[in-house]
Length: 431
Image: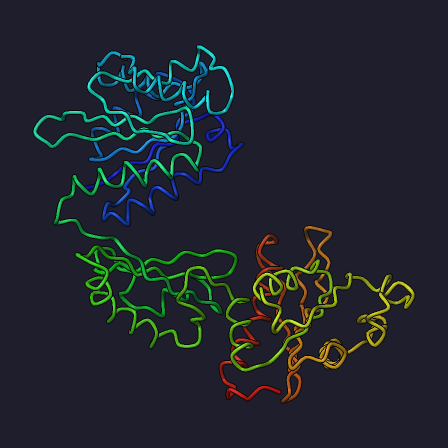
């Protein structure tokens, strides 16, 4: 059984609003054991909506649409379904009473235009909406020589749509599937340190089409995520099926893997490791706008390990004037990398100074980013420093790649260096 998710609205097709409903619905369908094979987005045009629904009915067993159930003239879902199926719209008096009651509870008079929201294609079922004025539509459409395609039309307001899914749509789908229903699950493995093609090369035959379980790679801001996916009779059956593949991936990739929790990023892992080892961290950033400090502050929700960060602008003009450096950074007052400076040594000095100044076990320094004012300028290097109780290490990395990824990739290089350092360290008692 496959599904299609249809998002309706000019605000979606024009790019004014991000379509998060389709993502969420696909995840919920997977929880039910149904694969979302198609995502379709269509604007507020009646003929286009009719074409989309006709195609969806032919190729999907379940069609979930969101949007177009409001009271205004550009809300066309009910008309589109009526025309697609050849079933006239009929007024549902119970639905109309519920809509009126909602306005009464809100101490407002219902505009007569809202009565259109109680119009449903003949033979369809009403999906109650306890939080809004747009009930949903549950409609089965016969198909020659096949089981019917079932359409669930839901409003576009996410909070309303999710409640209606939980209380009405998900139970209806479970009833359709019966006791033989399966689940579709994914095991996430997050990696950092190589490119996408190199990672695939390290996993011979893993990414092959048709393999069970499937293994897919996605890249997001220099982080690579492997998703081991399969359909199974239960969660336990899924884990049994995927365990050999997951074990092989762990053996092949080793320390490239930093998490198997889809919600975790490198900063979360670093904070967790620091807390486990009763260690603390300070940072110094040049020209990154304090992004690393923000990541670590958000990850260290209890303020247990992150001592704080010093954020300084790139450029010698500012830093060469001690009066323009904040008073809290007295020990860091110096010209940053003037001509002839050994950048590696200077980065190490900053790391050691920050570690002492903020009384931290570890300190990370993100060096000054090369300027890229002209398109023909050659890529430069950025220096990353890591000071620890065991000494100071400085790494030089080429500052090259897509401009939108450079800063985040550089910060992740620093966090990953600290992660590897922490993973190789023995757990020490509290200081």
